[in-house]
Image (cartoon, rainbow, N blue to C red; front, side, top):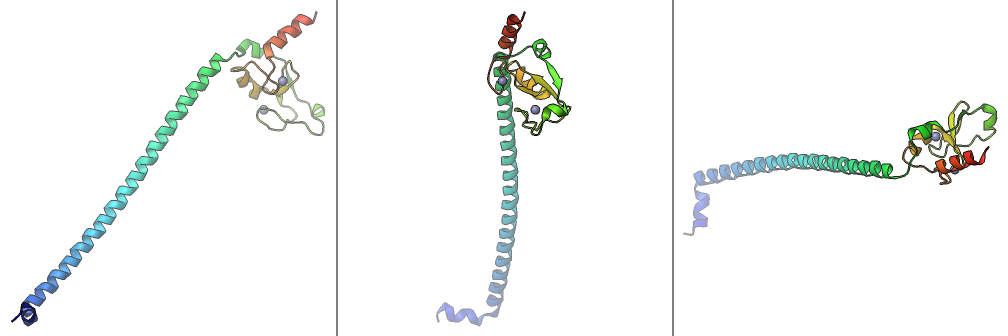
Length: 160
Ligand SMILES: [Zn+2]
Ligand SMILES: [Zn+2]
């Protein structure tokens, strides 16, 4: 007379439990699948948001660095546009290049015949396009660190 012996005797109960178990399994499966989809989508969105935030942070720092560079560049003693224009320029000829023409100390590209260069008073020369931006924020030779303007003025004073 225990309930366990009673249960198998009632087929309606069996069917009900079978249906119930099947339905429960189905619902659980659906819930699990939907949850996994939701979590995946949420993860993608979170990752996209993190990437966007990182990009914004990078741009913010880049902007700060640029502002600092501009500010320190202006604080540095540098050549005026007129002083830069006054520097001697020449076009590199094939014969002056020799076997190894050498390379520009700023862009590191090998010199080619026809390249426009600027001669600094220290006898170092660089591509005009390379050294002009440098001299607009710095008044020293990028190679030997000698002052460009003082040397030029001394050289002018020495020559009769
Ligand atoms: Zn160069
Ligand atoms: Zn130099």
